[in-house]
Image (cartoon, rainbow, N blue to C red; front, side, top):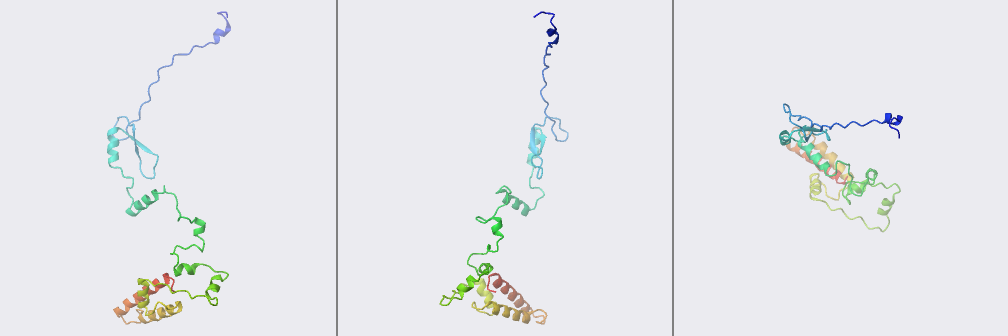
Length: 208
């Protein structure tokens, strides 16, 4: 190739790269500090993933007073800690999905209780037919608990009382001991409250 060739005119020599200066570290974000801020510190709750940049001395001071739960009540802190166990994801009862839980056949009551039995739908009457079948064994009497027995005693009834008898007795006692009818008798007022509590207990237990 000739030295006076046109191709030599197109050759450009590269300039020697200037030595690149190392990037400067950001300044510490602590007020009045001009040292490099190379240590990260979390901003706080509801700002996850965001950080302050401090020098070593000031990041220690910041961490000493940092409280993620600042401003929350004890109940809110307890709820957060409980939800943190599952990573703040929704949970359901074991073996029960959301759609099944909303089914009328699903009950949160204990199995075998009268209340849960009464909630089961029987559109074809199979259960009623089984109960009233000729020669069928009578349903055994339910074992009454201590509080339930006390409620029956408060209302002056036995554990074998039917739902209609319980409701009739409740109306009778409420009418008798109502504040408008007892003439200011404190003993009658206490009896009135006791009757209401006893009836609510029997109702929740499925007796009426």
